[in-house]
Amino acid sequence: MVARLTVILFILVCLEAGILLTLLPWISDWGNNVLLIYVVDITGFDLLDTVVDSGWFRGAVTGLGVFNLLVAFWEIAHFSRSVEELEAADAAASRQTERK
Image (cartoon, rainbow, N blue to C red):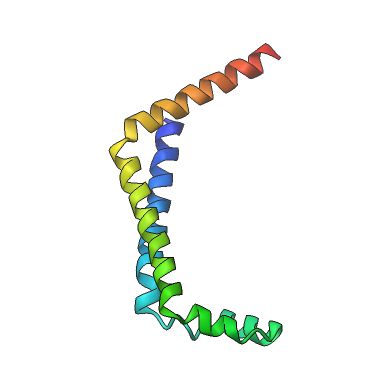
């Protein structure tokens, strides 16, 4: 049961991260956030603002989001196998502690 919940939680985290990383750079005010302005003011690294606001950086973040979505869909497709592997690893770990 714990293995099933672990895999389900992992799938949900991957889906959420994937959706956020895919959409957020394009629908939000990506270049004007308080944290970025604060970091640029503290470090004096003005190029950071330009890099984060550039299209290629947004594309890289979107690519990371798409990768997270692919991992989530792969885990959904191989749900039972992932649960079996986690249960086997848990059984092996419990046998290892029993021997000690």
